[in-house]
Amino acid sequence: MKSALRTYSGLLQLRTATIAGLLQSQAGIAYALKLFLIVILIAGLGRWFGLPALWQQPTVAEQLEEAAVSIREAGAKVVAAVLPALTDLQTVPGIVAGFLQDQVAPIVDQVSQIATELTPHVVTAEELLKQSSVTVDEINQAVNQADVTPAQLSALLAKADVTPAQVDLVLKMAGITPAQIEDVRKQAATVTNPVMAQLQPLLDRLDMSAQQLQEILALLSATPEQLVRILDLLSITSDQLGQFIQQVKATPDQLQQLTLQVRDEAVKAEPPIGVRPARVVNLGGQWLATPLQAAADWLLFGLVLLLVAKSLGGKATLAQHIAALALAGAPAVLLLGAYMPAITSTAGPTMIALHMFGRVIALLGVIWCAALLVKTVATAHGFGIWKTIGVVGLTWVTMYILVPIEVLLAIGYLLRG
Image 1 (cartoon, one colour):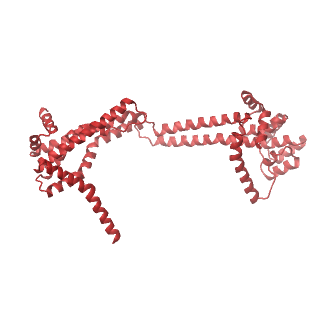
Image 2: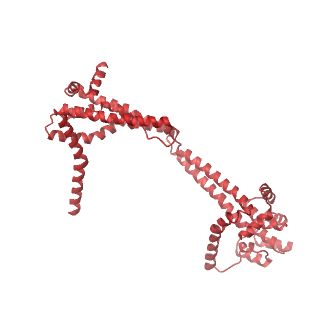
C-alpha cells in the first residue's frame, strides 16, 4: 500500500524515473490501468451531489396529481367568480358583457346562421324562451319539432296563458313521465314570481333551487331582480347563462378526469422498486460507467496520437502508449467538480460557492493532466518535452481541423460526381 501511494505521489510530481519504471514493466502497465479506473471513479462521485435534488424531484404521477388538483381549484374559482361578477352592475359591461358578447354571442349567431341556411326555419324552445310571452300553439309547435326538456317546458308554460287542461295536454305531447310532470308542476308553482320564472332555466342548468340561489345572492348583497336586469342588459337568457356556467364547470372536470387517467397509467409504468429508488440505482449505474465513458472519450484521441507519434519516430509499443495515457489521468481526482450537476435557480449561496469551487478545482485538474500527459508520452516514445508538445498539438490539429476539412472535401467531391 505504501509503495502504491509512493508511486502515485511520484506520478503527481511528474518524476521521470517513476514514469519510466512503470512503462517498462508489465506490473506497471497493469498499475496504470487500475489507477485510471480508481481515479475516474473517485472523480465520478461528483454525480452523487445531485442525489438530493433527484430524490426530491416529483414523479410523473405526482406531477399529474398536482395538475389535477390545480385544475379542480381553478374550475371552482371560475364558477365562484361568475355570479359575483354578474351582480356587480358597475363591472358587468367591462368584464362579463365583453366576454360573453365577444365569445359566446358570435358562436351562437354563427351556429344559428348555419342552421338557418341548411334547414327551414322552425320555432324552437330556445327561440321562444327569448320572447317575453308565448302562445299555446307556439309551445305545441316547439314540442312537435324537437324534444323539449322539463326545464324549458316549465319556463314556456310560465310565459303562456294556459289552463290546467292545456298544461296536461302539452306535457303529454312532450312525452314527459308522470314523475317529471309532477316536477314540472312544482316548478310551475314556484315560478309564479315573474323574476324567478325568468331565472328558472338557470336553476335547472345548475341543479339549484330558487332558495339556494337567493341565499347565494344574499351573500353577495344582491337580489334576483338585479340579476334579471343584468341578463336583460346583456341580451342573454338565464338558460344561456346556465349553459355557459355548466361548460366552465365541466371543462375542468373533464381535464381533471383525463389527468387522473394518465396518472394511473404512469403509476402502472413505474418500476417495481419505485421511481425514487430506481433513480438511485440509475445514478449508481452512471457512476460505475464513468471510467468507460472517460476511456471512450480518450480512445480516439489516443489512437490519433499514437499514429502521429509513430510517424515522427516514436518508440513506444501499443501497451506502453495506452499505459502512458492511463497514467496521465492520475490527477483526475480533481475532476470531481466537473461531474457535479449544474445548480438550479433556487440554489443557496453555499451551493453556488461549492459549485464554483468545484469548477475551479476541475480546471486545475485538467491542466495537471495535460502536463502529465506530455511527460508520460515523452517518456514512452523517447521524445523531448517540446517535441511531445508539438506531437500533441499536431494531433489536436489533425482531429479538429484537418479531418473535418478532408471530410467536407470528400463529401463535395462525391456530390459533384
